[in-house]
Amino acid sequence: MSTPEREARMQKIRMQRLAQLGTLLAGFAHEVRNPLSTIGLNLQLVLEDFQEPETARDKRTQKRLSAVEGEVRRLQTILEEFLQHARAPEPKLGAVNLNEKLQALIDFHHLEMKDVDLSMRFYPGGEVAEVWCDWDLVQAAVVNLMRNAKEATPSGGQIFVSTMREQDFVVINVTDTGEGIDLQQIDRVLEPYFSTKKGGTGLGLPTARRVAEDHGGTLTMQSEPGKGTQFSLRLPIRQGDATAEATP
Image (tube, one colour):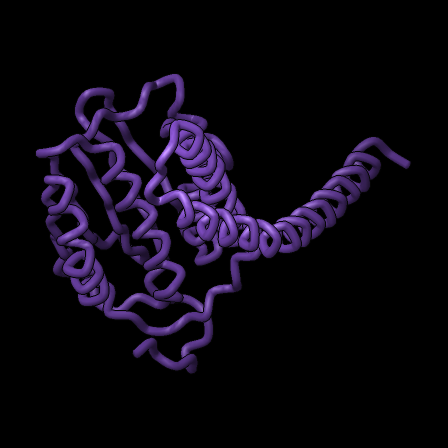
């Protein structure tokens, strides 16, 4: 067997093993989720018995139980985001008025941003009309980008969401005036399980990138330390079967 043929065969075997490993890990995470939920529920019930601790021992017990419950909740978040990333569904494409949907999404999250003293504005591109996409998946990706911007931006900062057309593509930009990302970390930001946030799962941005790629698009970023970061979700305007039903 020639070297190129052997390398192609080995690459195919590696890909098959990775696919099997992904399936195995997703099944494992699913099996762990139920007992973990039971543990969390019972911890909450026990903590209710210590809502008003009377002795120093009760106070120590309450503190330790609260710490354990916090770790259980963190594990639940990691599992849910892993399952979301590992079992991302195939996009169900439909015609979506992107500017209209994004405006409604930003209106919905306005108070959430206002509560932490952040302002968020939307600048719709005039040439952006209907886009052929799965709005549920795109919405989840944009929410991930907005929350990432929220966590990266100190009080008094701003978040801008905008759309623009680039030939046969539409670009959704989410820009913040936060701290920016260190140049040494930029190449790793979109990698699974890498996070610059304390307690972050590192799966939000990779999941957003996967949504873009599953649509035939891309997710890119630009950042300048001390000035802010911009993520650009680029999607084809038209793709798939033209007979698919439009998203309501």
